[in-house]
Length: 367
Ligand code: GLA
Image (cartoon, protein in one colour):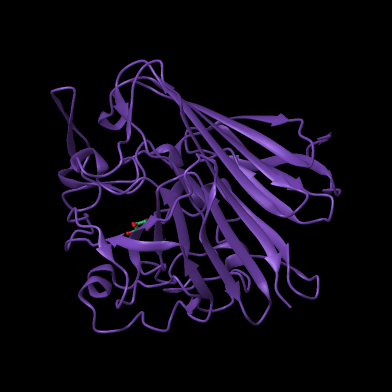
């Protein structure tokens, strides 16, 4: 059972507490929800942008560390340009030329990434104040966040009703369940943009983390990081993570795709099981602490991003700096620019249909 402790109470195992996290520039109050599981591991989530603010999980000696990058107050998220921990939408990742055709009509979006649209536009879901509700769940703590993205918001058609349910389980798994419905044909691609460092946030670079991605192919990009449409074999390239390999082992190789991304910033085509349940997408091991994170998802793709644009200039939690490549993201998703790529799996949502995807980040340890 979830019990709601009063604002300001110290988190107890098996509880959810709510506290003030500050205000938006127009004065709306924003909260921080601290979900503490039975073993004392903790996930903190704000209803500003639906962001995962911190994730405190044990190492092989039982020592908790916060493995997610973020900010101490809502103000940090208001100014954020890196999408730390956020729910990204209506369309996560890029749409080429900030334009697409749907049902014979051309829709034009704001260009917020060169000539292209990135992560939902200028005011994406990461800058919205979501309505939060604590749910009663067996085996963990759950928080439901809801948001209505109005018809025409950031150029997208249709009133889109979105719900994201975060469940922090007693087994140290963060499940993210996304649902959406629309009243007009639209495109939807929601993701979670957590930046992880399994040694602990602000503990140096992530180049020594060992990564496995269950992908035979990836989607190569052009100079704007828009997929060319090709599905390229990972075999024989620095994109082959079918066997666990250090993230830094090949990151600076003389490879055209790595140069275009400034490192890894690419969508991988996931190996899927036939039924629509979650499949294992990726597994990451941090050898010095023994922390392990597995990513399970119903989605067809995952963007592996090595924090190439982090520059150490923005102060994060506790005033620390986050230098280049001090975290990695595994953003489960449909492929970038799908609205303009007829051969990619469809991202179209029609009235009467329900968008529904699940991604789970499972934390454990390896001795
Ligand atoms: C995604 C993109 C990156 C970058 C980050 C946010 O991972 O693919 O290019 O824009 O988001 O900084």
